[in-house]
Length: 134
Image 1 (cartoon, one colour):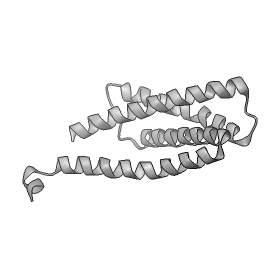
Image 2 (cartoon, helix red, strand yellow; image 1 turned 90 degrees about the horizontal axis):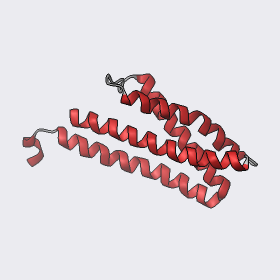
Image 3 (cartoon, one colour; image 1 turned 180 degrees about the horizontal axis):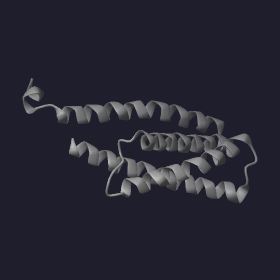
Image 4 (cartoon, helix red, strand yellow; image 1 turned 45 degrees about the vertical axis):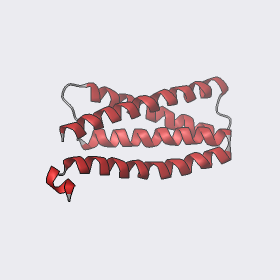
């Protein structure tokens, strides 16, 4: 169980850090060029909410006493991820409708695949050695 908790904390830090980095890169573009259409405005608004949420989640995970299981912090993390993905998707839609659709489909299909592998990996490790051999 301790191995799972350590993995989850590292995973959240990687997700938060990666999404913050991508969001800052997109934000630079919107600041430099403006937001001429609905997709770019949507992206900017979602970025404006996602970056602080993900940054606060990252800071909370650095604290010695973890609040990892608290509902508020889980909701903050999940909403931050959703907003970051919405922002990235809107930025891609701004560039190309076809690319935006591909991003949307791959995101929707990719997450369940990851979740299945994740659950299978950690549920197998939690079973006693006798049950694995049967």
